[in-house]
Length: 273
Image (cartoon, rainbow, N blue to C red):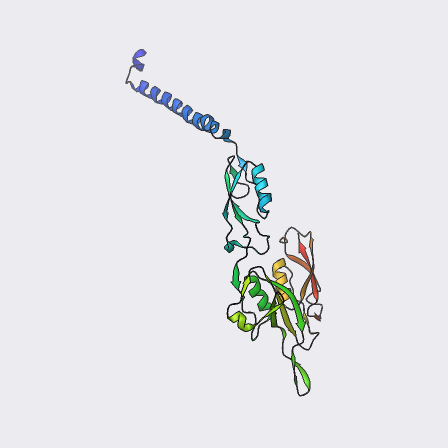
């Protein structure tokens, strides 16, 4: 029997291979499950908290409480968001919910303190409509402020004739009128600034049909309503059916089929929760 286990015999070779495989497997298992965790906080991880849209101070407090470090990665003007206060966290890496080791550095992108300076879009001139102005200002991250409606007509043959309705007649920034020529020459304005408009109202007291905004997002609905010459009233957030997209308009008042209303009238919205 001993002859079967003589050195270099086939059975001895197989036995050696089996023994070496078992030992090798044990070493590998021990490295990844015993040694490596012992030098990396025993394999414990931390879930990165969601600090997006928090102020700088709030974000730092939450990260430190979670045992994480931080570094400001970017706060350049290119990242400016006019809808958020300065020094608000816009994003961070690793992303919320990611599992990281204790004391990991989190890189923050902040809303800059000073908004970038841009050219005013061309919203004056022949055929400049309120709807077109709204889109141009929104795309430039500018806000529509006060809209003043004024009669816009000529007298011909002793009769008043309306020139236009919802045409842009004048533009104001901080109470100062901005002319078409100034805009053509590259009038400078800060992103997020408010632009006041003077809009034509025909003979005065002009009326129109409220647009149908059912199914649109709140932002899209506002664009349609204001662009059509009306103003946005109260917005109510309500529960809706599961198949209705969150944030979409499920009701409006007045309705689009309720006849004509004076331009400037308020339109109330009900938005899905």
